Image (cartoon, rainbow, N blue to C red; front, top):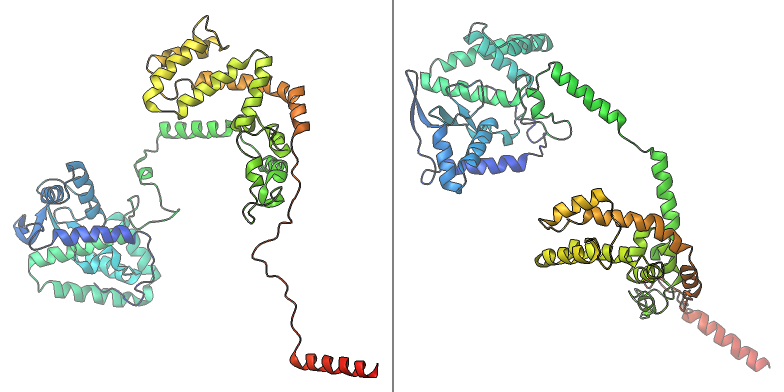
Length: 460
């Protein structure tokens, strides 16, 4: 077999890291001291030297890397599938059999990581040699490729046939065991670089890599019925137009533009470029009077209000006046379960059930019967998310009813009117900006100006 080495390194494969790891395993397996013990294997009446069995490979991997048999079987299968180990008994299929089937290590010349370009001329010589040796008994896909190559490189076909016959003549001078080994080596190489149709190509990479499971799908009526059903569900799925998404994104950006410290700056001064900490002081979690921007942000969404500790406190004051503060207390208790200590989950679930869900509780919350039944079933085996359904029900109840009324209430309007509007105390200047320096005049100009001033003085 002749391989062109002029274009070596021209193919950049992303699987190179995987190949290098497999090659390290192959090198360790061939170590004369700690590697596998090679022995002669009989193939019909021919004795193949330096061979091993599939069971030997699995046993060595288990002992060497302290892994289970399933992992060892998977790694051995990868070594065979990627051509680093080739079978002798059934060379047409690169499959590992965990029995006494003989295998041999592939020579490093044919390793996948060497990046030898598998040219059409080399493949044509291989098929021609195989066609001459087996007297035309090629596989169906090999016959098709043979005829295609004959038409494509017809101008060099005499060279192809001549090379095939010369290689066959040279192989007849070797022993039969050596001929079998070389044929299996070459066949394993071309099974990797020219796989048969429908087989998984281990050299494929990127987005165009086909799914390995697609080759196992049986194209029958059940398959097409499932495809039709999948397409029907896809057509019925709700979708949003890109124009609507962009419109909502622009609206969101315009809404939060005045609240972006990078776009609008910080008031009263930027604490990152000055020593003034008034900005941090005015925006603490709890302050006597909040800033106007902070109060305005509560009206953007209900979660903006709940995420702010001070906003949650003001909303609690309003709910107490409306006699519905138990809803917010229940929501806070559920949040404490979700993000609290795992060791106290059972205790907190019992407290929530006792104070909010049990009939006749002091702070009973209004939960529908379906949600209540599901929550009571989950309480039997408490976990961190057992109150999610009840919490979501109370959340939407406050969002649709209490939150809009709070924004229209006098409590919110008075707080918004009293809110602080910080005044700029110092003009924000980028600290690394180069200041304009007054250039000093040259000595000639200074002497000229001095002479002029002295002449004017004497004239006076």
